[in-house]
Image 1: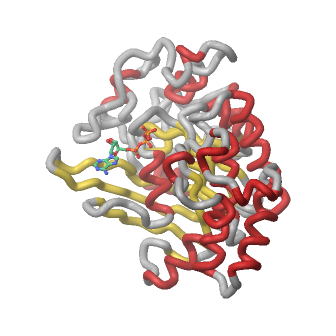
Image 2: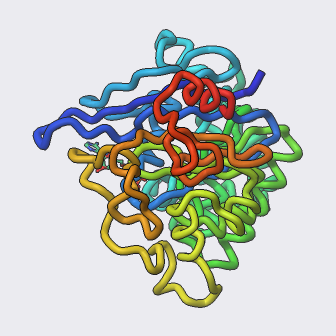
Image 3: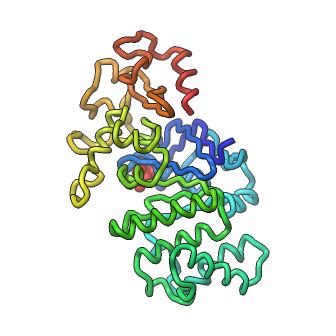
Length: 342
Ligand SMILES: Nc1ncnc2c1ncn2[C@@H]1O[C@H](COP(=O)(O)OP(=O)(O)OP(=O)(O)O)[C@@H](O)[C@H]1O
């Protein structure tokens, strides 16, 4: 059994602009010791997915489907159980550590806090554990006595990782955890996360708009577009040999190191992501797709097997029902094969 199983997850924000379907039928699995990257342009639903996993969605959002952590559904569990899952089962490292840390408390106390809250441990023992965690993330133990403003951005992000690991979670979600850091520090922090994942057999779900970073640090990649996973597979293959035209455009957005201006913006791809209140029918990517076919505006697309461990939601994938070579769009057979790729 996978540590994390997401089944038919749909998240909708209900607001004054109308309903925003931010996540639309996502299915993902993640095993202990595995790293899965989630990539996609701003607004595709990555953070909503992360927040839903720990039931941290704001009021006004509804979530349907299942999010199973060790077989227990986060969306349906009691508050008591959810509290335990939030630290000991799974934890999140967000972007922007400066704002997440309390400026008036020493680092050690902040790292020790989740241990004190969630475990039956005295203050001195919790502080010793905090010092130990700081050394594990590459900071000297004496940093426990520092205040956040005395640390660099990279050091503060390490502190956030130490906090996330404090109660030995089995799943860590890193949402743009290193985006604000410069490239060298980013690589160091991501290497550190990768090492901790391997040593502790943690499942790591890493969210970033930067496909090249994810492909370097994750075993598998999921590419999202308009609330759906449109490509899933081994990271190297998705990055270098994408099967979905959007994944291809996204990987071409990170062609060269040292060209920050081009990063994150799919090159050669016109238009913007769709208005979330008015997502195009058929394939949601079809209005921007450089290789669009006539049926793309009407054929619903789901993930379809596209090679070993691979799936893509595109009618151009060989054998896709409704593709030029196949007249079986929308059949039960299509649904069955789609499910078998989860
Ligand atoms: N609190 C909210 N209320 C209403 N709509 C929201 C809210 N948060 C996000 N959305 C909308 O949901 C959609 C998905 O947003 P989300 O933040 O999950 O995307 P993202 O891929 O993480 O983007 P980014 O990389 O910019 O954070 C967007 O259309 C966004 O405008």
